[in-house]
Length: 158
Image (cartoon, rainbow, N blue to C red; front, side, top):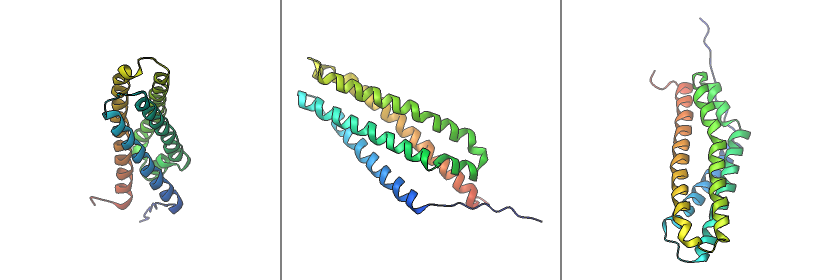
């Protein structure tokens, strides 16, 4: 009887780059959360928030580009074709999440030029934390997808 054996190829450079990207993304996200939790009392607070949100937007673009460039989802699907629909659904979320953070960063930038920016920042903060919830759910589902593919590959539960 023939046995089919799948192997999982892991590129060390890819893992290092993804690890560094994830660290940077978490750092920027943490910084944004801290800033947006604090009450905005001065125009300089709005500038700091705007800069941080722009940094998050740029880091998120890099994060999604790395996942796409290195075939993050493709590798999981190759290991477990039954995960194809989940992987495609998660991949399609990237554009929506990126557009959401772009809108938030653009709104923050427009507030810099608004006379009553400090009073209007609450709406921006609410939008940001709604984005964070969606993004963190997305990342959790990506991790679960990769783990499901990995479990298939090593035969967990056999």
